[in-house]
Structures are given as C-alpha cells and as structure tokens.
Length: 370
Figure 1 (spheres, rainbow, N blue to C red):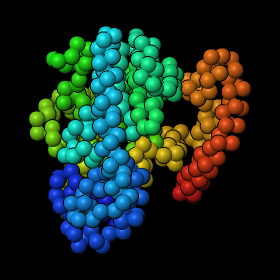
Figure 2 (spheres, rainbow, N blue to C red; figure 1 turned 90 degrees about the vertical axis):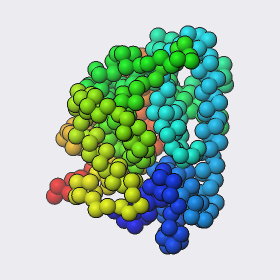
Figure 3 (cartoon, helix red, strand yellow; figure 1 turned 180 degrees about the horizontal axis):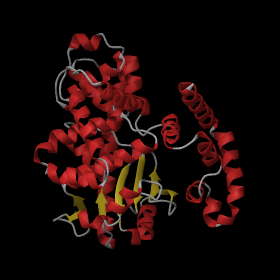
C-alpha cells in the first residue's frame, strides 16, 4: 500500500470517528493525488470533512462535499414524495443499501450517493413506472433485468428492484432471497413501507458486496460502510443468527475477513500491521474503484474459466445478456446473430477503451503465468 492510500485511509478514519487529523501530517500530504483516489472511490465528501477539521480547505474537495449534501437533501425529498405515491397506490416497498447507510454516518454528505435503490412489488412495476413518469423521470431501462432505472435531471437516479438478485448472480443468493418478504418487517407508521432487521440488513449488505466482488470488484467505500455499520450496530447484533445466515449463503469466511479488515483500517488513527492476506485483499479494493472495473472483471472471469471460453463469451454473450444489451434482441430473440454484430459495432464506435482494457488484462494475466 502506497503513501497516498495510507493518507486517504487515515483521513477517512478521522472523518467517521469524528477525530481532528494531525495538522502537520495533513500539510505533508500530496492532496492532489489524495483527491484523485478519493474521487475514484467516491469518498471525497468524507475526506473533505476530515481535512476541514484540520483547517485545510480545498476548492475541489469542498465543491464535492457541497454537491453531496445537496444531492442527499434532494434525494430525501424526492424519495418521500415517491413513497407517498406508493402508499396511495398500494405498492409495497423496501428502501435498500445507501438510503439506510447514509443515516449512520456522523454528518450529511459524508456518505455520497449515486442513486437510490428500492425493492418494490414486482407485480406493480407498471404502476411504479407511471408514478415515476408523472414526476418527470425518464425511463432508462424497464423490464430487462431485476431492476428498472429512472433518471430526472440534473442528478436524481432511482433503481426500482423487482428482486434483490438477478439470474446472472450466484444461485445461492437467488434462492435465499427469492422469498424476501419472509425477512421484511412492516413500518409502524406506514401501510406499505418495510424494513429489514439490523441483522438481515447486515447479511444483505455482505451478500451485495460479495456479488460485486465476484463480478468486477468493489472499492474501499464499502469497507468504510462496513466499519460504520459495525460501529453503530455491531454490539447489538445477534451474531449467532448473522453467522448462521452467512453460512447458508456460503460467505461466512468472506464476511469475517472483511469485518476484521474494516476494523483494522478505520478504528484507529494509526494503521496497524496487516497480514499478507489482508494486504492482498486491500490491494484489490484499492484497484477496483467504487463499483469495480473492467480489468478486475476480466481477471475474475479468468480465475473461473479458460481464456478461450472467456473470449468466446465476449464475442457471443448468452441470450439473457443480449436481451438486456440490445433492445431488438429482447423483442425478437431470433435476431440474436444480428444483435451480436450490432453490439460489437457499437463497442468499436463508442467504447473502444473496453477492447483495449480487455486485451491489456488478458496480456497481463498471460505474462504472469509465463
């Protein structure tokens, strides 16, 4: 781990533990590179709060924090209006992930949000769409996966989920969460709003992280989220129940490893010595960025299958993927061959960087084996 990463982790630890960073250490930091890494992991708001406690105010950090605060306020107001409409139309709903997590952080804007995720009644997604359209949203995707995506300019993104996991995700997750209503608890002051127990929220948080980790990696914001969750809820959790569910989901060791690492990284101003295994896990988080990246996706794929199979899947994705990727294949599946040609033409014209990244990742892995 390099010095820039150490500085960022130190500042994040100070932020969530409401500690004022050492001014001399802050002055010695390469804040331009700290900024770049914080942006890559979408933790600039928390970093800014720590810096300003130490008396350091940088325009680029402060502007991101201000935007995060405004965005959270706008999300809160808009989400309440949407939920009021759900109540009126008898649509049950369960707020997910960041909507819950942001409330556990010490200050508004410390936990940045790119979108809001909500699990809804899968039988009423057409009604959900009408509500979103009536509120000025455009439909980015509908009916093509386990969630529908909506956007309202300039900055509001909502993902309305039919289910918590899609067919492409681990089978054990799909099966465990197929009947998610068995885990849902109705809010006392609303007719159709639900929540998860703290234990079930923690288990789902881990399953969601494992999903991203399996696909293309996930960044240190998730480790920070875990630390904040543990800091606020850890002492009251029924850990026997949590670990029992994690065993059912085949992720007990994964969670214990991440729990230990999160506590090591953020519970103290002084970063303790990490084991070689912990260093390797942390390095993967640092490489991945907020939601993972294409290089990580390639490397993880190649850990599970041969290079030939990977290349064939790149050129000829399965039908489920093609239906989500190319609209006319979703409507007319027999046009799959034309969809493959269209998809690669689109990639070569608008996303050349993906091809370059895949080739570099393949070369890097091959060179390591040689």
